Image: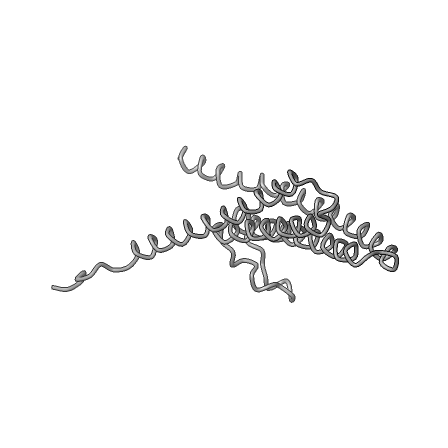
Length: 178
């Protein structure tokens, strides 16, 4: 009886995560505001900007878009994995990926998005190389390489773990033979 009550309490505690996902929606709105500011700045300066400045403006918008997409992935995948399933029948334009990303897939998507965002930051720095110190450029590249290597290691460990789970579930040779 005590065990059952404790388990119900622990299971219900997952709802404590819901406000975190609401906070991410608010953060997404803040990011949208910044994207609109960046777009306004881009559009009002595009005719007087150099080619490099136009590319930097576009990269800034792409960076904000990737970050927004990352937040959406975390909101939906996290909510579905840790809080509650969303009834997709109620939503006509339900994306195929939603509801199919497990925690392992979420980690990989998260790190892939971080690598893409980091790559854009490095590219922006290269486009503005005259205004960035060698030290800052070196750290941007080092941090990006660390993100890339972390992604590769995470993908490899997930692959090894998945292979181990498949091997454990596979019937043993000779089993069932008499």
